[in-house]
Image (cartoon, rainbow, N blue to C red; front, side):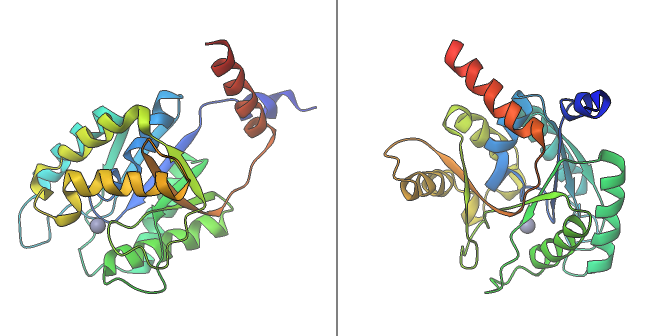
Length: 235
Ligand SMILES: [Zn+2]
């Protein structure tokens, strides 16, 4: 038995989320990220664009809003200034590879690539590029639920976020500059969380849904579940 590699397996885990725009991360995953943070994970949120090259000069606003959301869900943000509606697959591949080098993530979460297309070019390019890198480097990869138009998204992993639903709502509310978007409305967010609960046959509670593209585990995965089970039993 290699003791060193065993001890590494029980070290802090890192999740890296890669999304095109600030707010893309909180809508589908704020609850899950909050739960992971509470469990000791290092949460790194990478945002490809910062609005600085778009028509509205909202760069500073987006940074502040993301930092406020990060305080609530326990995440640290990193912004890039790729040009909205114009960044290339190659640019995202480069950013992703560099971020993997910096953070050595155990898990990457990004947009779901939707073959049916729903018209959001930046999400599509991000999803394809990040999938390319994660698959090539054999890193566990989850896709989060699209904000609208779920066609092509096939969830197979559901997280009960009932205990942190208020934190999710608070994190989303940090994005005041985006509140006029239809999918940012509180009732729509809660309805989607309840929709996933219904899909699972649960009368109550709130859930987030993901599609596991690829998951690789080692022994620590099973130890973590067993230990967590003990904690729950004894608490
Ligand atoms: Zn977006």
